[in-house]
Image (cartoon, rainbow, N blue to C red; front, side, top):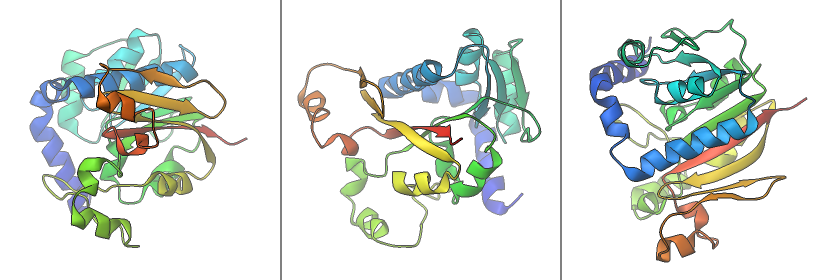
Amino acid sequence: MGNQAERGVLFHDRIAAAYDAQLTSRAEDVLARRAFQDLVARYVPAGSTLLDFGCGTGLDAFHYASLGYRVLAYDNSPGMIAQLRRNRDHPLIESFSDFPAEVHYHAVTANFAVLNHLRDPASWFESISRAEWLFVSVLNPLHWTLLITPRRWRSIFSSDLRPHSSHPCITYLHHVPSIVKAARGFRLIGRANAGAMVRYRARYEQPLCWRGKRSLKSLAWRTPLRPFLGHFVFLVFRRET
């Protein structure tokens, strides 16, 4: 395991016991998680096998299992997997700290910016190329809180992908076109911006919206400003046939 990956594993092992509290303390994070789960259930029939990549302590995995999905829950942090097995035991969840390369699955989910820990997502897309459906949630690289910093503007116009953060572990900001380019064999069919509210637009379907209180921010979500709102971007891919 490389130094970067090992550093990430050690960090997530260290925070595993407090992970649930951290990810459920902010209302916008809870809403974004529920919206992501609803998006998966909208496309993937219950009873299918899901690979929950970067499952953490199993917040998503347990939800999917409760809906009748068979869940392969993978995380490279043994501490996270231990918490999942301790607190979210379910007959439809099979958990792994080594990637289950030879197991068949119908869909792959990667929630809460798992792909932002990867410098080159192309190899990851190749590793899960047998899936029919793919759902990812990444940090919004155009979020207004990032665009107000000069360093971020320099990185946008640079051809070199620089780390977004190196503390406590390295993360990268990936723009949607670069993710789509990396997803060889898949086509993008829908996307959403997700934060305090979520707005989802599919290629062939009516918009799906989770709305918050009426405010100037909620009005902005109806304008061309929408790409700059929401800390996360959801992307829905389907394998090309």
